[in-house]
Image (cartoon, rainbow, N blue to C red):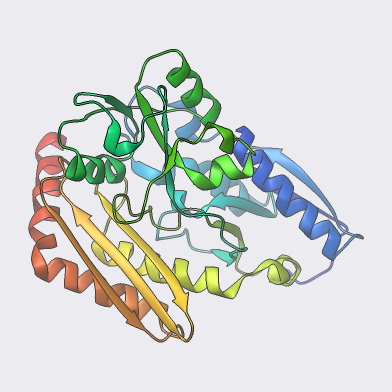
Length: 318
């Protein structure tokens, strides 16, 4: 167990503009808390950053954005890491933990249209860029006349492709645009009724080694309990559904007074079938609430949707 004080720490991060902005925000907060501790950034290229020409669902899903960083943590090459929680699998490697979840940024998705059209005004057949099956399913559920095209890359790459005319519109997470102060590009914030967010969208997670008490105590003041509680509920739902990038699953939890409200859905990839439900309960039991909603979605037909999706995946793997 590591409990000794250190004068310097290494924070691991992906190299994108957004990842660096998020990590720099955490470093600044930590140095305000403990000015005597120097925090340096170490850029680590992940598999998800290297492979940009295929959909995530076909190459292993969201873990591709954290795997190499977690390996560096386990080897002791870095002391902590900052992730977008929507990129973090529900199962962490032995010896690692999400030590805290800072205050959550805007969880919504945004539409950026080349001609300034709102979602309901997009012409039939408009080409929408996204790499997310979750977004694809929900957009097609509302507008089956649209054409969804794969869009990978960092935020600046995606915006460039839109400007070049490769798409009529693209859908991105509001949180990233706000953190980079690029919100002037936004055409419309998609309402939750149209596009429920990804699990953990808008939230950051600081990951470290379970036995590193010094880092655990250092980052503790950054934790925002309402954000952490919401993310725990959402991730419990995803874990019960065994979901990842291969499955259109969405959820968003909010604290309303003394009640935790969790909204979630399972959809078919083409958006024709979509099952959505809401549960509420005490905020002291977020994981139980997530599992409860997952069970309700499965009982209402979500199990058939998942069987269909995983069945196709198994057939393709053979």
